[in-house]
Length: 125
Image (cartoon, rainbow, N blue to C red):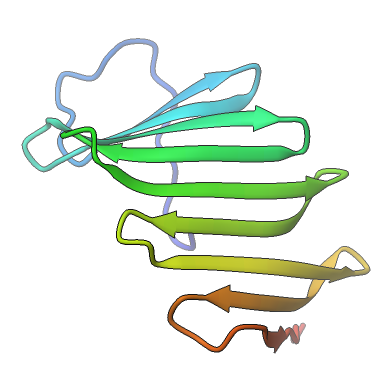
């Protein structure tokens, strides 16, 4: 996120949780994210699991309704595929092609676009 400076890590629970994101980390990996609303109340929670080279997450709202399900596949630590299905069954799947440690192509499969759309990347230095 360009222009957003992360907050410092704190040792105790903040008194004011208005519009706050709280990340739980275990062994250097995020395992849960809580999102608080403008009143400081828990609004959403996302649980993240890592199974081999795959991250899986499930995000629910305060009423325990599923908001989204996400899967990210890695190959030797590099993202090769990312998928997301929302609670209303909208979906997005992206397959990433790499060349010289830079994304070269992105193939998109989404409920709101033509399947197999290929996006060619170009970086201007």
